[in-house]
Image 1 (tube, one colour):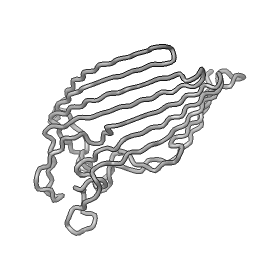
Image 2: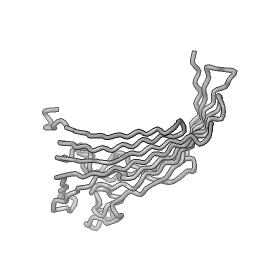
Image 3: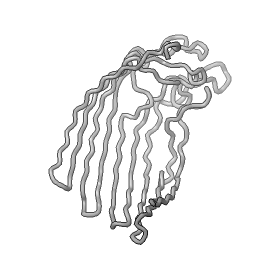
Image 4: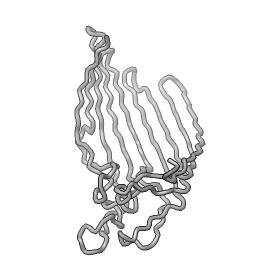
Length: 239
């Protein structure tokens, strides 16, 4: 809104895509992109700003990357899809300054925060018959750079946890990578054509990992433990 003095964001994106299908059993899809943003604002760049509903202003942000997707029909019933995404960029003129947190000097951050440079997915699909279909996905999400105020992974922490008047130093500034596996089973019974059922198991191997989540208060870190193994069973009938 105009009263808040917030300018509208502006963006330009350029993309180049190549798709190659040598035969019905293979497909290759590669995309390159480059984007420029102006007046880009992010809610709660630090936990301190979340509680005050403040905005930090990137006067200019640039991102670029590539995505490669490969599809293979291994057999008549078994398909394999590989997907890799690389994302990089920079922020210009983003500064943090907060004397209340014993950060008297402005600190510049030029890298993208909360963005994994590397992501990789592998999907195996097995179409057993007209009734049964199985999907098994392996997902890798690389490490993410934390914000300058992150109290869990940054040397410049958002609070004095020990109560000694000195900001705590901890972490290397990055949230760790994680790998999870998901399983989905779809069933369409022949005797009841309008009925479909599926069983989905997220985080099949019950991995322990953290990921980005909005903080509710200034002492809560951005990255929270994510759910372990969760099982969902659903049934749908179309009249």
